[in-house]
Image (tube, helix red, strand yellow):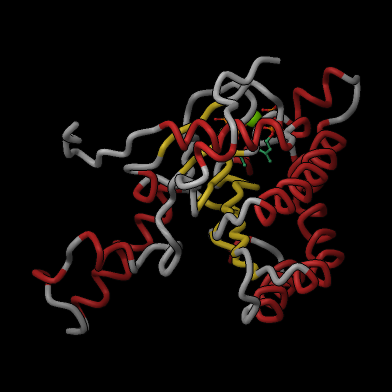
Length: 248
Ligand code: IPE
Ligand code: IPE
Ligand code: MG
């Protein structure tokens, strides 16, 4: 496999993304290639998540947002949805101690009300237990949709205006951002999508207006330190103009 962006670390040491968001795609195809069930692929995907969290810490990434379940993924066969929810619960039950060990602060974004009470309580508990950890912020997008996030933000803004907390003329981009699930987090610098598709699939929308985008054909369970480094190196080569022009 060729990694055309792999360069020496020294040259790029200054431009490290602070917030990386990943669309972890390809578990199903990875399993199919091995004659296994999709659930087996998701389990392998969970191992890749654990590896990636460690890589993020090693590379001093400040925020890692992972797309684990989209608002559209309910359309999958019931058995697969159940296996994904079970895996999420398993991870919450078993990994909280590791989150504390590695000083990770866990956040979960998405429409959590659709989950059963047991899962919800494990989510809130894990967030509470890790709230004061000062290391990596691990932001899990579960039953998340970018359009849903924006609509929820709109509803909250309308409510604030109706109740007199906010004047309509105060609604600027910075203010509206505060009504989204990602309020308080650093801007997303880099989006990585594995699995070969070059689309956003209703992941963060507002938040990635100026993010750099890195796509790889590698299937999520095969994600490793080399692809991670390649994505970071790719980011380092980007000139982020934000609409301006850079003078020579
Ligand atoms: C991504 O892998 C994981 C989730 C959506 C939960 P997929 O399950 O979409 O895998 P492919 O795209 O079918 O290979
Ligand atoms: C995006 O992958 C959602 C997650 C990775 C959680 P999908 O496999 O659901 O996306 P599409 O269907 O290919 O757009
Ligand atoms: Mg997919």
